Structures are given as structure tokens and as C-alpha cells.
Length: 211
Image (cartoon, rainbow, N blue to C red; front, side):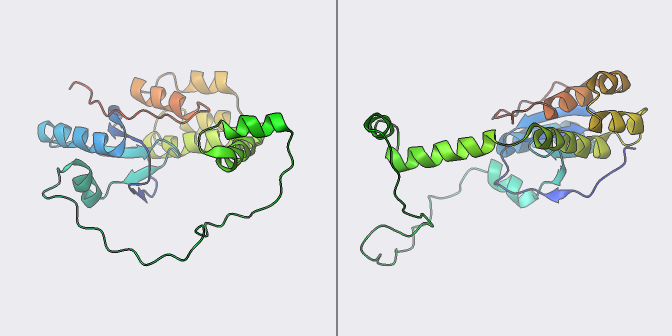
């Protein structure tokens, strides 16, 4: 039995997850899609031992059944009527936005004005993209290694070469890491490779593997 870590509660805000029955992947994608796949899978596999992992962090999560039900059950009635909004004071709403002067050349203003959302939204978007790009290579590698290890410690804690593979991972010795995990189940190795990618998966599927 693999060494287990404390699972985090799942919330609807998480974008995607991957579910395993022991060391076999059974579903991956958005939470609603995974919920439907798990329900279908459970009906034919009453002895399944399902573990679910957040794709962004690699951490094991506990799926709240109420969240699952809300994700897969069709609405029984129309949406509840919205509560009346309180009268809003004149002027723009306060959203924590700080107004300051920005000096640009005319061609810059023309380009910004042509972007979706206008100049202010475009400037905020450019700043956020620059902040993400400024993340150092060392910090980026550390994040990838930590989410890979989170999955490893929950799924593969008792697998052969676990300790050696962990050391190779944090040393960024990927050829040795791949050699040490080569004997692990294919679905586990595939998900490890996915967690080491430098882009978060945006898959919205939830296809279930054939049993």
C-alpha cells in the first residue's frame, strides 16, 4: 500500500484533477467531468480504491460528495430569483484600483485602445504576464519538483526506488529519475511526466478508461 499524505479538501474553484484506482488512471479533467466518470466507474468496480489529485499541485484531495452532486446533478428548478441590489453611489465602483499617470507614445495608446477591454485592462494584463515571466528558473523548477513529489509521496511511497527517485528529482537529475521510475506502472509514470511539464493542463475532458 502506498504511503499516504493528508488530503486537502476539494473546492469548486480548482480547475482540474486526475483520479486513480490504485495505480491505474481512470479519469482526468474538470471536476464535473471527473465526478461523472467516477460515478460510472464505481457502479462496475465496488472494490475500487480511488485517489484523486489536483493537477496544479499534485496533492491528494478529498472530493466532497456534496460538491460532486452539485457538479453532476441537473438542476431541479430554474435559478433562484436574484436578491435586489442595493442602490449604488454615483461613479465607478471601488475595486482596489489605483489611478496613476502613465506616459506613453501615441502609437502605444493607439495599440492599447484597440485591445479587448481598453487601455487599462490591457495594461493590467501585460503587467500580470510580465510578473509571471519574471519567476526565476530556480523557483519554477522548485515548484515543478514539489508538485511531482506530492503525487509521488501519496501514490508511490512504497514503490521500488522511491527514495532514490526523490533525491534524483530534487537534484534535477532527470535521466536518473526516469531510469529509477522505469519499472513503475505506466499510468503513474505518465502522470509524473505531466506534473513535470511547465504548463498547467487545461483539459476539460473527463474520459474514463475502459475497464
